[in-house]
Length: 318
Ligand SMILES: *[C@@H]1O[C@H](CO)[C@@H](O)[C@H](O)[C@H]1NC(C)=O
Ligand SMILES: *[C@@H]1O[C@H](CO)[C@@H](O)[C@H](O)[C@H]1NC(C)=O
Ligand SMILES: *[C@@H]1O[C@H](CO)[C@@H](O)[C@H](O)[C@H]1NC(C)=O
Image (cartoon, rainbow, N blue to C red):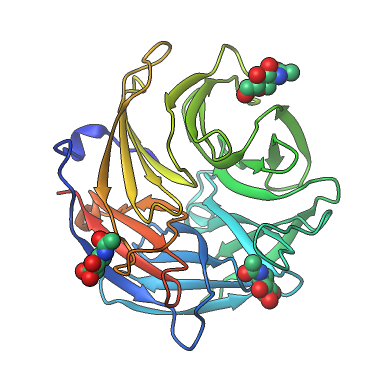
């Protein structure tokens, strides 16, 4: 659900766009951070807090947001992604399922070994969504990026173990198809490809994979020398398109435009929007794309550590 056809977004290189505030976490929480975002089919934004075991839900049209839930048994929440259902009955179509991660992160850059967990969040037909523990991963290091893979499976990037796991959303059973993924942070997918951020080497790459996420060819580097956390993809069926990158402490959203595989070379980079926090300092951890007709071409980004509370901003590329 994270890729759309690239004809929809036409951006002039070098043209920085304006940033509008959507939401600021209420209360006094100057060291708060939103680690990841997911846009629901109804346009509402789900935001995982890195500094508390909370998921917030924000309506970007009104700027209203509220805590959706506290996750009992978690400390700090990480990546979140919607799962594609393989079932087609009306009943199951209505159910919306997300997978998210958690770890115990007592202090910045300090992850408690063996604390990683994976959870499911379900919006059924009832009013209140439910959360359940899908798996504890005592041997994992730090589940960071999460992305849907086919129907009812999810890819989990482990920054510390430098691996990608492929987990069944119904059983929690998982394999480890990709290893040696140094610095892996955000993970996104397109049919037949995994795209990932390497924050240690400051790269965006992609690799062709089979149905079980084993690589079928060499990886391609799409961007270098780029501060990078999680990112959104807008690509066409050939794999040509762009990534919108949360550029960490650069406090900016950076676009990289690249060609189709297998040998597109590094893409062309430009700053879509800078000074996201409006204070000159801040951390952008994630960028997501609007999904409904009225917010196609809108990017939502998290803004953390900007001197105030965690926030979400919108950038219109239309
Ligand atoms: C992790 O969450 C706990 C609360 O569950 C909080 O005290 C701690 O500050 C958080 N860590 C970071 C780095 O924000
Ligand atoms: C792991 O990746 C690095 C570069 O990212 C490469 O230099 C190294 O050879 C790889 N090691 C293995 C075992 O594939
Ligand atoms: C960031 O934006 C604020 C508000 O517009 C402005 O006052 C400040 O000078 C900007 N800082 C930088 C480094 O661009």
